[in-house]
Image (cartoon, rainbow, N blue to C red; front, side, top):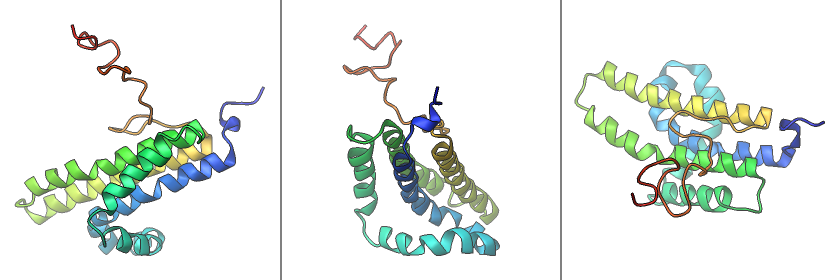
Amino acid sequence: RPSRASRVPFVARVLGLACLVPPLVVAVPFGTGLFAQSALLREVMLRPLLPLVRAYYGSRLSSLLIIAGLYGLVGKNRSLHPFTRGLGMQASTLMMMQFPLAILLQFIAPAPAPIINFATGSVFMFYLYCAALGALSCLTGEVKRMPLIGDGSLQSFQPRGGFRGSPLGRGG
């Protein structure tokens, strides 16, 4: 009997892996302090992503378009494998995290430089950790839950709104 992981086609895994590139591009500005300190990190991550970073941050609408694209063209596309859709939803949600995180970092902007460096480095490491979980998902063939993101499914929501098991789910 084939395992669940072997049932995920190779193409679905590669497409899922491709969905993780935009969140890595989003993470680059949060890692500037780490890139300045680590030549290995600059060579392994920054150099390959730099053309995409320039293109992404060259337009004000690119973040919204890519988030909508990941959500609509991958996450909600029923013609794609459920594995790819799950990773697309996770990547879209991970990209949306940039907005509240940027606002939070603005609140601590008056703090001393070491605190700011720690905060931005932590955000960068969060993105890297989530991308690593996504890459692990592609290797195993099973979507892993990402912290603050979930597993990429919307099964916890009812079609009419509300949460499953919530006393307020049906208006009561």
